[in-house]
Image 1 (cartoon, rainbow, N blue to C red):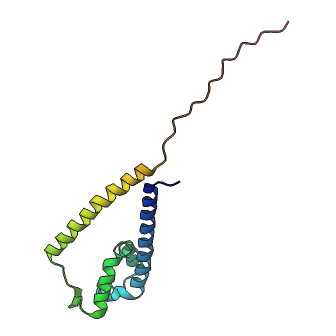
Image 2 (cartoon, rainbow, N blue to C red; image 1 turned 90 degrees about the horizontal axis):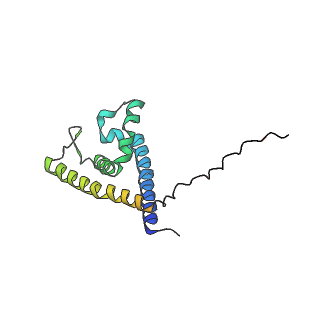
Length: 138
């Protein structure tokens, strides 16, 4: 029988796997069609650059979908570069990100610690009795 913390940990692992799978799919799409639309300066970038940015594409895929959508509609670019966000919106985003991480990371660690199986006490091997000295047979 599984406990509720094991179920919750399983759900978190499944959610992380789903997020990773979607991130990989979006990263492939961005490499294939969207990278030059998101940033025209990446036209002609080599494979090394693409390998270097792939982890960021996978991790930030929701935001990159929004940027890609804006680039396709033509509303997110002025003069060939992305419109810089305001300092206030960046601060707000950082506060939200740190707040979510500040709750999510300790909660996940606590659930993992609670759901681990109990440790059994160390086993000791029985000590054999000392051997009796052999007596010479007459």
